[in-house]
Image (cartoon, rainbow, N blue to C red; front, side):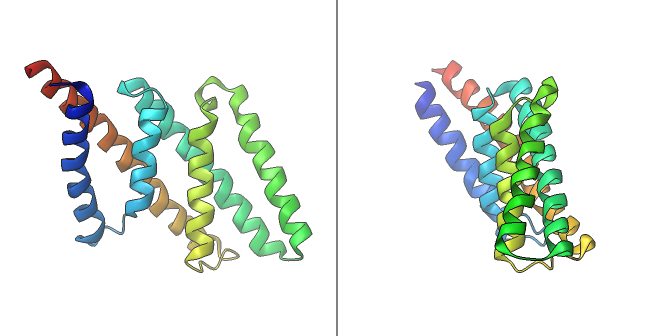
Amino acid sequence: MHIITALAISIGALAAVATYLCLGTPLGLQVWALFIGWGSFYHSGGKGDGLVKSATNHVWGVVVAALALIVVGTVGGSVLVTSLIVGVSVVILVMGAHLPQLATIPAAVYGYASTAAFCLLTGVAIADAGATIKAAAVVLASLIVGNVFGLVSEKIAGGLAKQA
């Protein structure tokens, strides 16, 4: 079987499982963040190394975004002040790439953007550090589960392609 066909089958079947896991259980996982993590796994090179790169950088992005949101919520202020806080936090996010473990900048950005989007679009009280951390944990768990689904889909597709 061609690898693309094998990937289509494995990803499609696991997408159904992932969607059920997010929508049909009380885990609170976010299907959209799971899919971002899944794509990030492949974007980070796949295999065990891609899993580690993607997951590690998701953690970094989620942490930086959560801290930025807490600061914005605490300081409050104008759009200008918020913009400056976000700008500084993104400088910190990218500067992390000086460490080899944090050098997969796109995966860090996925974590950052997913956290900011979830908090802001669901109305999380960002000045409440506990609420922001809880929301960030939901996003991070969803991203990491997505990374794992990427690895599983890759392994299943590899097996299907070898059978042909």
